[in-house]
Amino acid sequence: MLLEEFPPDENWFDEFRVQVDLGFFGIEKDYDCKELSIPHKKPKKKELTAEQKAENKLLASKRVRVEHALAGLKRYRILSDRLRMQDFKFYDVILGVCAGLWNFYLSC
Figure 1 (spheres, helix red, strand yellow):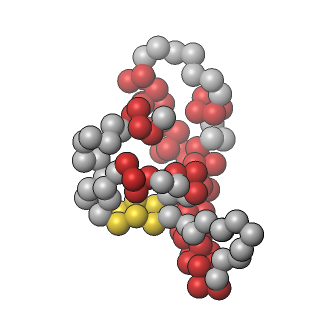
Figure 2 (cartoon, rainbow, N blue to C red; figure 1 turned 30 degrees about the horizontal axis):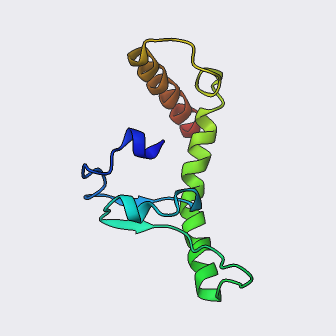
């Protein structure tokens, strides 16, 4: 899906620091990034070193904030249920309103 939305022949991530999880393992083959942060994958029948585990924990502690923000937005059912409207511009407005409501909730 990522390859469909962001064709690799264009320079999408050249100027950005990209943080991904192991679901995007191999992204460095398709895209050039200013800086890429991806956790270490456990080798078959071996364990990660203590240094690799510490790096993975640091990446996870940064990524958890993003995961919590996405989970907060999904509390609004219009964003988590199946989209049945055809007007995607209207969906962008809905997403902006839900993000604003969630930010307001967090500020209280």
